Image (cartoon, rainbow, N blue to C red; front, side, top):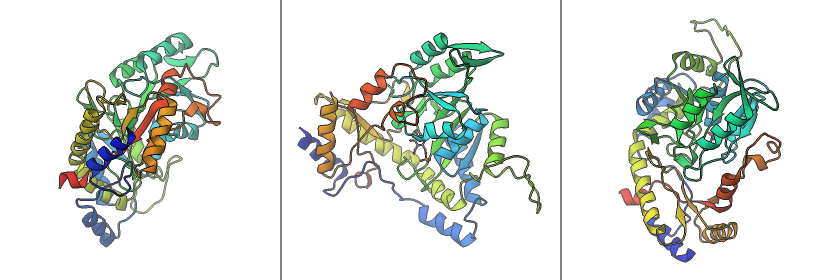
Length: 383
Ligand SMILES: Cc1ncc(COP(=O)(O)O)c(C=O)c1O
């Protein structure tokens, strides 16, 4: 059974060599733009590529403001600062996520509060969120507080897992109703839309990552998007050391951060952004082939949720048990085909094991069964 899967994956990538989970492809203007940056000597946080990357992201996502950052974690950290998260606040998120979501919350000495995920989207469940807020919170002066601990619940950070959009309109409505600021961890979902709107636009803020393993990459990089002028301008100010603009004086008006994406990374990012639709079309074709392959295999292929267009960043399958998952993991990796389980659930890590949480039965069910399989842009197929 898994031998057949190995053969199928090898056919998709047309190679007998090791097949990684997700490899970047530099097939456009990357060399040209990076060389231009070096020649200009503007390799750091000032330069034309940072500005044009922000402009490109604005156009591509439809957001009014974009703030380019050094990486996705910094983008998320800054988005939470802009959302007003403070020490001892609670921030709702999902346990099934990469650790950066919880790390960014922790940088502010706030605590994650884990709500279960939905089995269809793999992201935060709207109904579990509503149940929790209805039963465990009170409103005081238009703010949301946890009944038992009295802590403020300032923000909610759903994550678009593997590029598949969560039911973000429902979540946005619930957050609005309970006075909780919505920040989308859209690190994995560049190019993914829900009901025709790019992810990251439903929240007050959205944060993306351009790490080497993402759909488009600039080595390390991230961006915050927002449609709120005040947040957009403050984001740019805080990510550039909160320096007051002046020809020669160095004056800073608050504690700032050295979070601005360097121009040399932005050069790569611009070249990658030019190719994003080609990458996503190619990745969606691969997802379609996987979907057709798994139809009669007693293995569930994770499809994009309804009313959404996923970038299919990482393809995922659900086996029937933890034992089956482990068997497939071993066989595929032994055969030189990289596959990976889900991140260990955050509520099981010692740093977060005492955080408030609801029942995590869907997250635990998914963790036991899910496997990511190779998802790169296929250069040979497109040639
Ligand atoms: C869900 C999620 N959040 C945040 C990040 C952080 O992004 P970065 O690695 O660019 O800091 C990533 C990716 O790495 C991610 O997958």
